[in-house]
Length: 171
Image 1 (cartoon, one colour):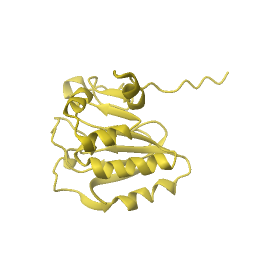
Image 2: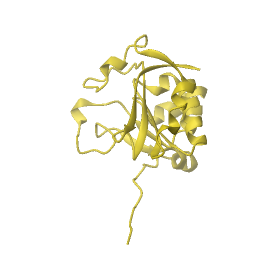
Image 3: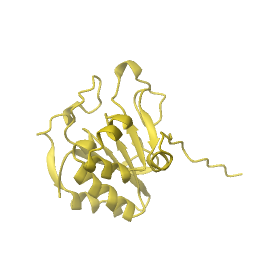
């Protein structure tokens, strides 16, 4: 299946915990002022790539912890991103996804393709980047309004459950 991408970053350490393959999709309707990837907004920009080619990179680093779907906005290409997410889970990798959409709006809209993708995501970083809320002190997001949502816990509980890093107490 084809996916329009802005780029790939192998061994990313800023797009979620551990070493990750970051897939930056092309196309975003949000146009957030101060976005760190404004070139990814144009839906006709970037380049087409076969999802199988991206999936073949999953085994390239035995230390890889997961994939991160970013953008652009991955929820604008939910079918292709679902294929990437399913393949990642099949290989024991975690899946993070960044979106400018807010969880509650996505749930209300209940778009079947987007909902299928969300069910394959471990952590969703939701909400638009707001320049007025920008903070370099935040881990894995750019502005204070964005949330790191633990999707499986949220779906099970029926209310937002935020992700927190594991406790690595080695005493």
